[in-house]
Length: 493
Ligand code: NAP
Image (cartoon, rainbow, N blue to C red; front, side, top):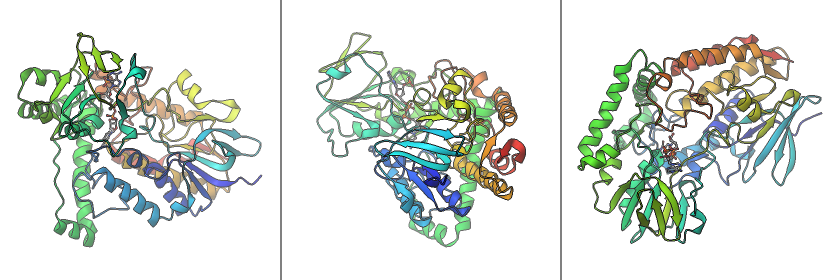
């Protein structure tokens, strides 16, 4: 049976674009990119709250093969990332493959026909030879079930459903959450609202952001002499790599590196917040790196403003007029902003039901056994499936390392498949087990299992208490391993 498409890619964010580019390089043109949103860009399309910007410098947070000399700042604003995604889609001729407002609800492997049956909402079934899930890690917004929230009489805005026209001037506003999103948003709302109350459950480690506009002359040099931008990328990526490898992955051997990062964050807090009690409340009780830290020069300072209050008592309920906390305080508000992040481990992994060979259900199998994927991309009993957002796939601090590593993996895998004249691949149990053992072993040196992470409430940990998100190798090793994995890790038919 001839499938509808050679390749279906689910998701038109940077992961999906990367996979599309790689398949085009392999000469495949029969590609459908299905995207549930109404435009491409993934995170950078969905998120458009005020203050949105990358927190990994743009020279690094971009494809290495598609440098953008036009970033206006070292840390580009979100809108520039969206423009960059558009540029990439145009340049690599990906737009004609995209179908927006198209939600994939499930997929199952058809062993007889050796293809995937993909269920699309309101559009029946599409078949494809190869299925790529590029659905992101942070793509399922999370709204806590606060008692009484449905009775709230004012406006509720989740940061992933931002209302661009909303005017906070003169309003009493509450924001729940102090993750990387809130850190960017809080200074912006505080500058407008009459009163802002920040509801913090767990403080976040924040280090200074060495951000500045990139002068036009430098942009011109980046444009004319691309080597200069490559050099800037190398320097920045190396610094991030040092933070990741010595601060997080090799915590056991290099504790001083981790302690230094925490000291920098504490000194930053000390210089920015005048009130000692507020400083104490903003100081994490868990080790640096247990939870993703963030970068900001304006977040801490916001708590010096007379109109901004930090509330650390836990939320008991929401009433029509405001929020009641365990200390008995009622905070009256007009607008409630939920910066409560994403649900990774319950509703993601995978983002929709995937049933492979022998009826193996990926979500159930991951939950009943351990979360696992060979090189963070393929799973036994799931032939011809490339699951880009898999356990142990996220490498380094910039998502582009993960994407480019996976592109290399696709290139090598399909090169071999073709040279054998095959059309179906499947990773072996042995290769998968060996990889799981390797990452489990390497993680034993990390801050996750040696540091004090109990109070972090970190999404790096899954429901079994395993830090199953990050790949515990340096980015150089990741890229090398993706280029050199043993070809007999797969069976080919
Ligand atoms: P997040 O890090 O998961 O933060 C969610 C916040 O909501 C946390 O402070 C959490 O508190 C709080 N929260 C959740 N449920 C709660 C409850 N029931 N009661 C009180 N507080 C509750 O989500 P995020 O800030 O959206 O960031 C997610 C990730 O997106 C970041 O780690 C980063 O990787 C990425 N990001 C990147 C950028 C960038 O590069 N520009 C910007 C934003 C986000 P607890 O910690 O206590 O659970």
